[in-house]
Amino acid sequence: MTQPGDEPASELPPGFRWPDGIRAAACFTFDLDAESPILWDHPEAAGYLDVMSHQAYGPRTGVPRLLRLLERVGIRATFFVPGFSAERWPEAVRSIRDAGHEIGHHGYLHEGARGATEAQLEARLLRGLEALDAVAGVRPIGYRAPTWEMSYAMPGILARHDFRYDSGLMDADHPYRLATSAEPGAATLVELPAHWALDDWEPYVYLPGLSGSGVIARPTEVLERWTLELEALTAEGGLFMLTNHPFVSGRASRALALETLIRRAQGTAGLWIATCGEVAAHVETLDLAPVVHEPPVVPAGWHER
Ligand code: ZN
Image 1 (tube, rainbow, N blue to C red):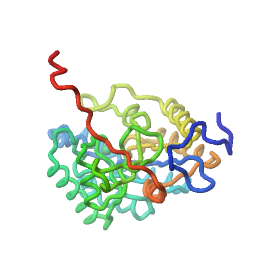
Image 2 (cartoon, rainbow, N blue to C red):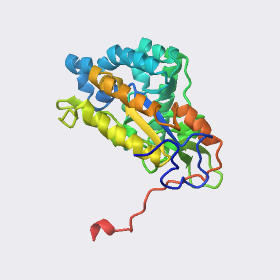
Image 3 (cartoon, helix red, strand yellow):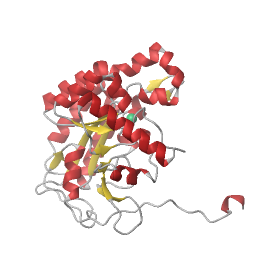
Image 4 (cartoon, helix red, strand yellow):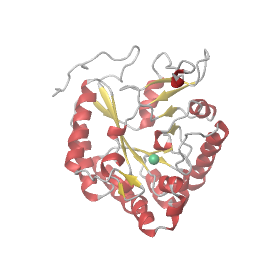
């Protein structure tokens, strides 16, 4: 167990530091997926009232509860919103905006990126931007890929459209500069890494035949898991990036567990609780060597050996 004022247990990446007096950071984020991911993967589910009501719980019931929770604990969060969710649930999105939370981009219909062309990826990005603008007058600076499916082309598309950060790559504990290509002087974004283990979908979602592991974890078990990660990442001087969904963690006992976690974070000395945009703005002030991602190249013919 770390004590207040402890130095990070390991060295920070070269050039990386948190603001003065801060030793680690936590972002509490919510992806307002609602019906979008189900409709993308299973268009026929639009005709299933039971499934649509399960997803509508997010904007209809989860968002108001989570906004009350966030007001009670006094923190600002980041909500990543698919354009389709915004069009279908405009009042929910406007209530998030009016409560002072950050709104980020999360695709239009929560599209997966596998096999998509660069033109398709860009068109989806633009459609999502139009929806958020039309519904809430919001122009996000941050992007989270639906299902965290990220094409190598996407960082460049984001930079072309003036996005400043992405949140969803999984190769680091600390934010970093993400190069949009290997070209010297290529544009960069800030990357705010995430991970499946800090996402509520995996332990909680149960949608027979459509999604979920089939096991619904106990909120106390999830709280224990996330608390240990919070403590460990704080000790490492890292970024705790928690991803929740209003249709999942907006449910009463899960929201209660989340509130317990947030209060523990607030009681952790030197831990900065911030929106993704605030963390990205800090990282932009650092002199960090950009990280270049290039696809691995397997020796020709290897699979045929
Ligand atoms: Zn999502």
